[in-house]
View (cartoon, rainbow, N blue to C red):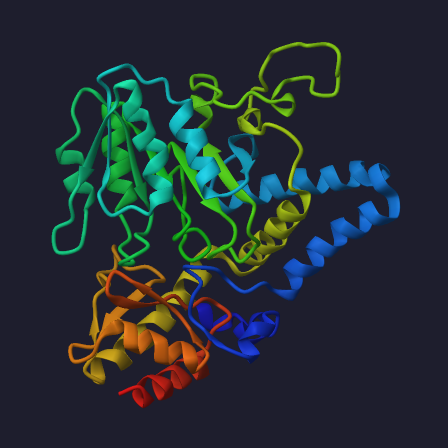
Length: 380
């Protein structure tokens, strides 16, 4: 299906691809010309008109909120803009009305952004249950096995940053919904690479920054809260823009908005939101399923080439577990040495958990893969 897309036209919008073999979307995607123009557009409006441009700007912000909702299968009333993934996770963790003795369940291999906000709750008498991996993986079944009647939330990355394992969110979401447990998903390593549908996968809360697979910019993100929960959860950071009449400045009507925008405390990062909007527009134009198919196609080519050359792919490669992240090792050489030599050859990648981590995106192509293998073989 992805064959109908002109991938080279999208690649040409990312100038960094002319200088690097860039396989590091799981860390930070290079900025596109489209996103840079969007940032310049809103900046130019304020340069030329000051506050007189606000009506036009906030119309665009509303459109971007709707686009973000469309991207994940939600309603625009379920979307709040956040500063980054961590900010959104803090909103999730601190909005849940815990009681002393409740517990939180998560994998023991989460990125720290999805650990510390929950770990801090132990100071209030909340138990944190961390599930150790088996063969490098934590499955949905392993998480549900330690849930009980005091489990209030399961929090998990849609894709694990260090291995590339995709969690079975549909199974996990179904279990949590049946048991009355909230499911929070850190989507930073999934959204933008994989098709995510919060309704079908029964996700209650979702956090995601814009600078990795979303190909937007640092300093902006999304927080999704399922509509049925919006008025049941607390507001950890009350702010002036989260109320029903934010522009009646001296009428201190302390009544929260009825939608997820109640979580937005104050003035927007408008340059960041415009960047996010430009990035999301690309995904909606192409289609999330087509983007996922292209990324899986590229990682399959890389995996096949690695294995044929005697390298070991350490990322899960079952259809329901694979993602855009591919980690590999050389049984005969240290991964740090491989990483260093690839970096010196302008192959941009990461080192995670003793393996070299590759994370190609739609701006990559088969020539990038050929060059990667040329550089990799030189390191041997």
